[in-house]
Amino acid sequence: MKKTYDVAIIGCGIVGAAMAYELSKYELDVVVVEKENDVCCGATKANSAIIHAGFDPLPGTLMAKLNVMGSRMAKEISQALDVPYKQIGSLVLAFDEDDLKTLDVLYERGLLNSVPGLRLLDRDEVLQMEPEISPNVAGALCAPTAGIINPWEYGIALAETAVRNGVELRLSSEVLSIGQDDENWRITTKSGDVHARYIVNAAGVNSDIIHNMTAEPSFSIRPSKGEYFLLDKSEGSRVKHVIFQCPSKTTKGVLVSPTVHGNLIVGPNAVPSERYDVSNTSDGLDYVRSAAMRSVPSISFRDNIRNFAGIRANSDNDDFIIGISAPRFLDLAGIKSPGLTAAPAIAVYAAELLQNEGLALSRKSDWIGTRKKVRFSELSVEEKNRLISENPAYGRVICRCETVTEGEIIDALHSPIPARSIDGVKRRTGSGMGRCQGGFCGPRILEIMSRELGIDPSEIIQDREGSYILTGQTKKERC
Image (cartoon, rainbow, N blue to C red; front, side, top):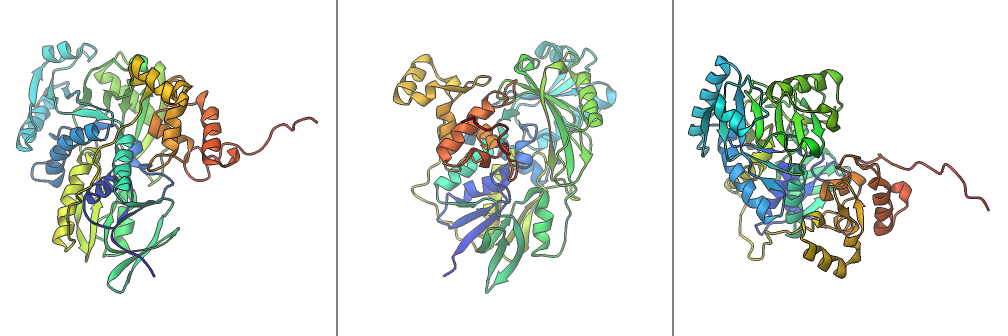
């Protein structure tokens, strides 16, 4: 007998994970189908990692409402789920009279959006707060509620919490078609059919494709690529705030910001792209470098340890696309920036829309809304000694750059959503994120994965399916 779920969520990026987290609070049978072999492998893992204050979206839009609400929720959720987050505030810089006029517009917009604590700063105030800012600065808008977060761990934490509370997750389940079976939806995926009463479309850059399987085309996704520099921790204290430039119609501008791991992130640009083109280009990186140095000319790009790119799910709509487009089918589409910030608020709003569409929401009495992780490097000496005495694996440091232990890697391999690739371990523990970028710890992590998962080393992958690391022996043992 086939099983029919109450809700099927298509896509498990930050929006799909937040939706699963929200619905896990209720007495519902929920399934998430994700085309990749892990959660949060799209825009969620390749972005600026910023929790925006909310002064940029136009007042009255869903973006404006859900950004401010999501910013407040992100702080609360990250504390409950033990996700690295810091409220460091942001500065939007002005360099000329036109920029100063833009700051006035953003300030008034922020007030209408109910963003707390906004202030306009003059040149001297900016340089006092951030001495490394260009002396050509004319002023800035200060938003103290802006923050930085670990974006992929945020998404993983939301998804893990959903799974712990009964949500089913089906990975490697790309959606091929959607039809109807009696009065319910039938979703055909690469791993089999899924039947559900309601569907939530959180498919990111593919949300228009999923929408068009059930309803007449009403929007299109126009992907935009953003390229980044990730600099070594020696550059991590170059600035103390998120440093923006005045936004344009296509981007919030090239930013310079500390990360929660102590690095410095610089980027992005904004160029039209294919849906899955995450390649870096010399022209793109040259643009990012020169634009960033207009804000902070002292950045040492010689200390760059990695470049990456992410794809934004821009659409032909200026706002988030959130609404019922077919009976019991909800679109969460075109979720571009500030999508990471707004995600938990989007989920709350979406749950209300589903309820209005007839979905009964009855709160669970035993919902688990907390999570705790071992981060060995952050423990006191006493805590480290106690942990090692209980489990010696925590005393074996595997990633020396980030001080990640074997115990933490084993935890990631046996978590509610277990890591199944080298990069999956990285996203859960931070291993391989240091200066050597996994050059030393990668082979050791492969050995641990092979042992813990009981699979041949040649089957271990770097990230997505097919990204095998070992292809065969180079030497044969002598008798």
